[in-house]
Structure formats: C-alpha cells, structure tokens
Length: 158
Image (cartoon, rainbow, N blue to C red; front, side):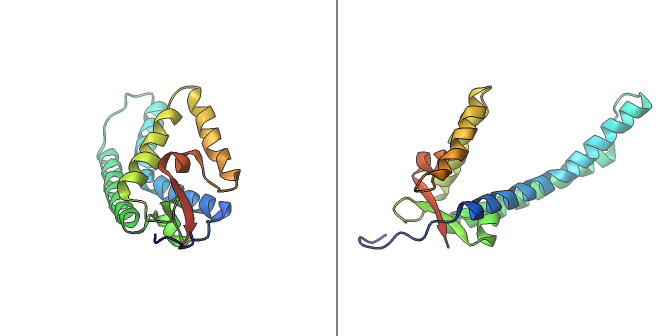
C-alpha cells in the first residue's frame, strides 16, 4: 500500500467464523462420498460378521471424493492467489491481507497461515492448547488469531 493509505476495515469475528464454517461444510461435502461408501461397507461387514471386501461402490465413493477435492483445491487456490479469499471468505466479502493492508501472497497464506499453524495443532496435548490459544487471540484489539500473527496478516472487509 502507498504511504498514508488507510488499512481497510477489519472483518468482524462473526464473518470470520461464518466463512470458516462455510469452508468446513464444503470440506465435509467433499469427503462425504468416500465416508458414505466406506461406512456402509464397514457396517455391512460388521452386521453380517464377514470380512470387509473391497467393492466397486467403495472405489466410486473414494474416486468421487478425490475428484471433488481436486476441484475444490483448484478453486480455492485460484481465489486465494487472486484475492486472499477462500470460498467462504468470498461469499462473505472478506479477505486476507498483510498487516499493512498490502496483498498477502498465496505462499504466505498457504505456508504461514495454514501449514505452519497445522503442525503444532497435530501434536498430542500441545495441539489442544495451541488451537485454543490460536482461536482465543481473535479477541484482541486487532482481531488477529495466532496464525495471523505468524503470517503477519489480517482479515478485512472486501
């Protein structure tokens, strides 16, 4: 941003939560075909007391989920690269930018906001505390979660 240019208005906590919820629902829908196929096969094997046999339905369910994952990943990558938005953020007219208001690149968003943030959250015991701290920091004045602080980003109205 040019010197003296105002930083855009911060996104509300509610809009950030809503965008994350939309993205989460999309993720569940992407996984749903595989989950249905595998769960139905496992339940059937359990109820019939037979060994689990790989079926064409399981293959179709996993293939459908993989195709949906590829499509969702492609759309999300384009949206994030163009304007710092996921599908949920785009629908709610919010986006991720650097703390100074300049665009946040795809690499910064992917690596620093997502991958670096994901690693400690996967650790036993530490992960729970880290995730809680990450979420609670949004109640600070600048409304930055821990992953925002790590990546030097803020979420603003678009």
